[in-house]
Image: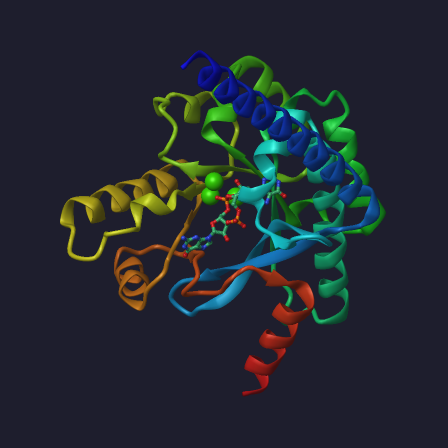
Length: 281
Ligand code: C2E
Ligand code: CA
Ligand code: CA
Ligand code: CA
């Protein structure tokens, strides 16, 4: 039994060792991915729900891993956040998104989105020159500041309200807008809406899942839409997956929505080609 125990322990130790090496390996490959140009920008439409017209886009990162193919953020963002690599990734995405949308605005202003939103993980608020980085992305690409929205989650915003609102004030002085992402999922009170300067609420998709036929949930979403209107905020409802959900949102007076039913994330070129074909048809 003792020998079996030891053998078992050795197997365990070997596996731990392998996992550690895997992790180090993945970290190294992720670090290199940024410098080798393996990150990809995908854009997901944000539409005006009543007309289904594209109004904005959200920038979502992908990793074209030469070994394992196209990776979704869930597969590498957690590691990037743990290792601090996320600020490099977010910096790359920021510039790439600004560049892509500005180029679109210049070449086909009639189909171009009015804004692009970029996700920023918590660590970015600790980057001392975050505002300079954002300013540089704008000036080097020519994108007007009012076309850029920065998305932060509630949990990030709640961490240290004094510091956060100071950072956000700096950013808003540039003319960019701030969105609260996954609104309604944090365990915060609504108090921060009073203290933190924001412009856009992105209602988490868990509020939309199962909304059809659920009156209570509909009332909840209605209330959020009203709250947004009262506070002068733009509201974007996320995760619209069916026509029924979209219809319901129109009835509820929602203006902006995002979801697989309205458009999936895709590379800029294919999104632009699709919209150009639509406008001819
Ligand atoms: P998020 O910011 O909440 O982005 C929306 C996510 O929901 C995207 O997943 C999008 O593809 C997915 N989605 C959109 N419509 C629907 C729908 O109708 N149904 C369902 N089930 N999902 C929908 P994705 O691209 O896998 O990104 C996941 C998360 O990774 C993002 O959630 C965001 O938190 C993070 N992320 C993505 N790109 C970046 C980035 O450049 N920087 C940072 N810091 N985080 C990023
Ligand atoms: Ca987001
Ligand atoms: Ca979200
Ligand atoms: Ca999220």
